[in-house]
Image (cartoon, rainbow, N blue to C red; front, top):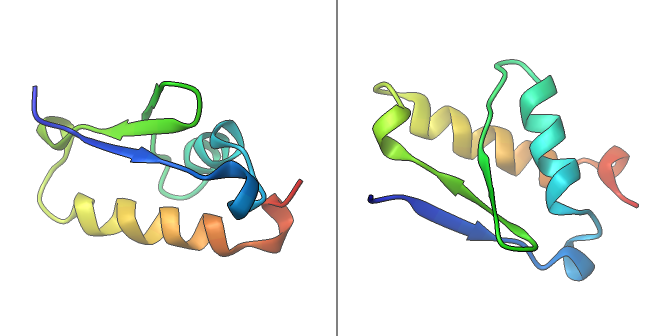
Length: 71
């Protein structure tokens, strides 16, 4: 199955994979992604409609740049 795996350097980023996934799920729009390994997650393009790739990328960028997510 084609999919993108995004692996986070949690220490350098200052937040956990699970906190990123939680913020994606709780945000607007709500985005649910599958966990991968210990510190990554999958984006499955088969479940996305046109334009949703860009929305998903933008939301991930917003989250990893928020100070409120930091441990």
